Length: 493
Picture 1 (cartoon, one colour):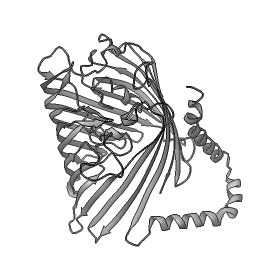
Picture 2 (spheres, one colour):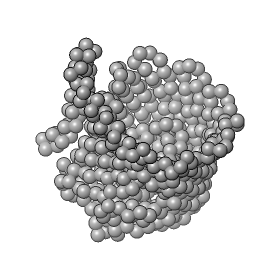
Picture 3 (cartoon, rainbow, N blue to C red):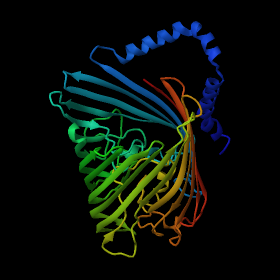
Picture 4 (cartoon, helix red, strand yellow):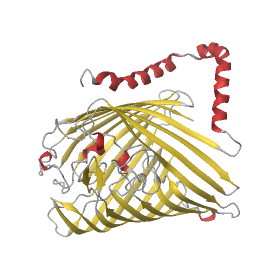
């Protein structure tokens, strides 16, 4: 890290730590002594925030502003090369409104924008090779009409429009979570229609979902400012999902799903260069998940899926259509001590099949569908850019096994530590755009480590420090260390 990098990469980290120490060193007696002096300002601020959130009796506002300083080294290039070191501050703001239209209809809308300040030359989009403030665009990342039946004993809900859809375990959503992987964590919406029916007597919930996702940000709705250089995803996508959840067995939930995804390639103009990063595909996925708590301190979750269909994309420089036969699965077993620090220990594992280069006419590469997000690693999703035709977070050909530990040493604070061994079932990445980076005879991807510190300072202000590293194995040619560091401050209401 250069001297120029240090101030920007550590500024938010210092702020998070300072706020955390100040909070930790404030004794109850000191807080009580200050409360009388600060009671009026706190009360005035709270009254102000309540007026902001409820500008009218039938309108509810919410929003947030997030500042993230991210520094990473080698995670895109996988080795010391041009633009291997990145240092960027990301400023994201969102404002949302919920407006009821009678007892059964609600309109949800949200506007989001993000600007990025590059301390080192950028590696992405029309700003590649430049430093300074990159003013991107504003986008409506939510605009939907939600209908909820109030006349039936069972619950029926329909949501039509731009909305977030998260299927699976909380914060471990696997195949359906992010419809816009091209813009990172800025947005994650789906242009879709969702019908949800809950049959309470049978303890069963049905979800029927239709998705029609366009790659360009202004395809369905205009953006504020130019967005042509930043596709939301690599191709136009349509899909249909049937998802069923049942809780008839005590302390157990069983899910089953059938997913169809259709991809259609598009050509984009990125800084004057025409690019066609996507593919044509028709992929069916059938899967199931079981979660449960067999004992007071023990919980588990296991999920698996099989994929079939066909895909037409570039392999070794040539386009071909091949039959898809792929599979994947993940599991987690957690033991909670139920002590004052809320200690939890988990054993985790995941397997995503890779494409076997020796088979002709068949593609064994598991497609993560709409699960291209940093579910278990912020760092490793970038390493797939050179491995999967330039696509971020297109995870496949992966076996990982590891342990995690989480605790809450004090109110509002959480600490997490994770370690994984990473493997590649197939030694050759068939969609690589940089063959020299891979040995083609090794299966060990490397050792992965993660440490996080999160702090909720009050009901409005939170922050975290996040660090990750991978020590590359014989799957890679250079075997250099890759690192990711992030500090974040967020204000939300």
